Structures are given as C-alpha cells and as structure tokens.
Image (cartoon, rainbow, N blue to C red; front, side, top):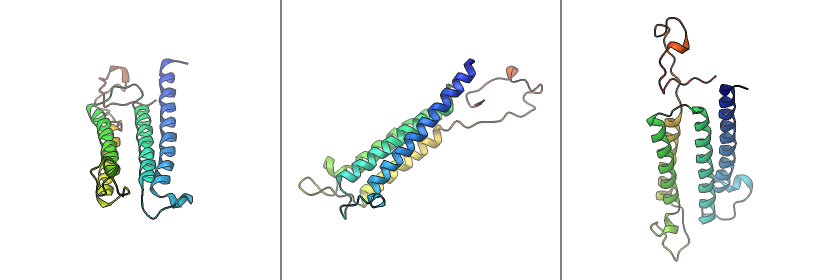
Length: 170
C-alpha cells in the first residue's frame, strides 16, 4: 500500500466517522427538540433537560461535521476561509449554548426561583447560532477548481503549479 492510498483511506475513515457522529448527534438533537417523536414528551413546556439534550446533540453534530470536513481536506493545506469556518462553527455553538441556557445562567426571561423557560428570544438566539454553524461548515468545504487545458498544455500534472485551492481527491 503506497503513501497516497494510505492518506486516501484515512480521509475516507474520517469522513465516515464524522457522518456517523453527525447522524447520532441529529438523533440526540431530535430527542431533545421534539421528544414526542419518540414518545418521550412529559411536559407541555421545553425545560432544562430538553434544552440540554438538544444542545448535546448539537455539540455532537458540530464535532462530527468538523471530523468529516477535515477528512475531505485529507492532509492538504487548509485555506484561511476554512480556518474562519472552524471558528464560526465554534462561535455559533457558544451562541446557541448561551442563548439556550440563558435562564439557567441568570440572564433570561425567567430568573432563578422560577422554572427555566425556553422562550422566543432564546429560540432566536439558538437559531442565530445554528445559522453561524451552517455558514462555518460551508466555509470549511474544500472546493475543487478545475484547471483549464490551456494552463497545462501537456496535460502533465507534475509540471503545473499547485495551489492550496487545487484539491485533488484520488
């Protein structure tokens, strides 16, 4: 097994592992966000346990997405946009956690003696965090640019310059 085949199989393993983690995280997210799909709805309001469960699911989705997209790069140098994407995913998750657990942290609509309540402001904050996570994942995608035949008249890959954006997945 040569070095290129080893890197490719390692990238495929990371992609599969990331996809499995994202699927598991999505199921956990659904258990927290819509528990009546699984027959687990015990309360008319969204409480602390539900918020915590869907935030744990969101964390697993973020981890799996990072592993999967990191596998797509397959040991090629990452662009600055991909690094910004990773930071956007992290920042979006922090915004989602802070917004979702605002009542628990003491700056939400229901303060300490009352039961934590997942209200419209918290839902908007979590939604903004999730949109940032999506943008971060889009920024991490290694876009593949095809070279024109006129750029490399002999068709020899060895003679052409390689740029970080020229991703080759063989």
